[in-house]
Length: 564
Image 1 (tube, rainbow, N blue to C red):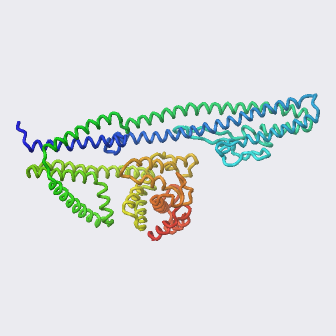
Image 2: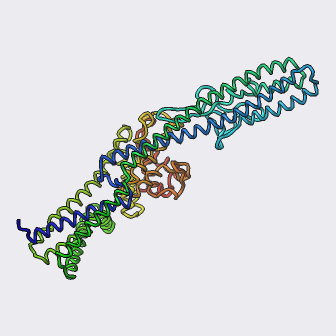
């Protein structure tokens, strides 16, 4: 078989392109330490990684709740241990006071000590953990006992503070104080110590003996409560170990999916780099290129690129009514890799032309590959963006009252951003964030999301996590660069009372403040499970009331002028 110059040049070009592609891919893995950077790297792997990350976040949240529960229970057990020692000391004093040989003056002294111990018991009943009161039930911000021993905490069924330590698994981490210490005038150790002190002062041996009998029952009850706490501590200990093992498992699975084996990658890179250098060396021997060829190729490519981008950008700018310069910058940013590849191809075409004009046909295949690459990259970016927007729409569709919510919020947000004369790139990020601002609600159960009545504190904690989940889902996607922080902070309030980070004023990203205004406006004009839509005048009044508290007052003022 005869090997012609054309066949050799064609094979050479193929080898250069293939060796460069392999080297670039391995270098990317080597520099980032990750196998998965874009959905196109491995769509199935990226989907699995998203699932593992969601499960890992849930497991981490449950482990943190479990650790918090352990802290509450250990603090309560420590306090009850002190109370047990205190009651045993009181019993010793009661036994002394019941003795026939003790004088009234000695009993008076014992009464004083009992009263001091009663005050100490009330202090134990007001013990805290992390600045929150242990024995007030769900009322953790105010002392459950006043100095007289009267109980002001919650009592009865459902009074205990709970923590979710697993999917649908809730554990009571506190015991109401009236079940342990009682209260003045209603039984329990606090009242027993009061009765004992009164009997000692009155030199009433019958009363002392009666208080002694009651005290034994109080000690028995206290030991039973400590047994309950001990069982719960044992449970959170085993659960914490299980959650830790699960968390380690998910991290290991994620590492296997996403992280590159650096030793293997280093060996592959050395091999591919040597191959690439060999190909270039062979090209240097086969092709004799002059400086004029490079200048001709560079000038041709520069002219074509400027003319093509200027023409296409002008058409797009006129059709979308967006600034020409910002459209041009966006096009260069998206297609930078293809442009560099086209520059290399232009030089190679000049080289082939210098060899023989007929060899120019060899450049058609690389040009076709670049065109396919550009088209596929654009299609992949659009499909990825569309997938997340449809996911956000499906979340809205779960609630019949907010079916078109995200699209309408995006329209309002873009109008407000344009009124502020923001750069085109920033407006595009705000538009993208508005369309998927409720993406994190994928983690909120329907029982909470569609609940017609007010949410419980535990349900509200689950709901408040959705901005964080939404931001984390898109944080590592290049097409959503700068969008994640907008989604995370969309529910922050101007006065700092929002969530998840309690930012206030201009600490909140501008894009998040803009979407918050648009979100509130559309929500007020929409029917909800718990109310009908407001009229525009009513919505305007509510927005003005929220300005300076929940919303940016300047943005509210501008927005209300826009929607007039």
